[in-house]
Length: 100
Image (cartoon, rainbow, N blue to C red):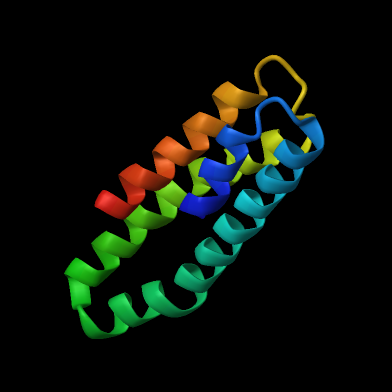
């Protein structure tokens, strides 16, 4: 995901490349979210009790925000004036989520 983001940034003068890397970023991020929701959070809830349920609940809320941003990005073109700001916000939420 990080590499796709960096490639998106470095290709800002080439819309075709930027679109490719934006799609890669969204795809990789969506895969991570699905994996966490299907595997990690149920394991937290099962093995860590109340603390695991709390962590899973908080992380799912963060995922919800990231998913909203990903949906917004899907409806826009990389050439849209506010695409970059939304893209950066999605990346920032991801970094916040990872830092947890």
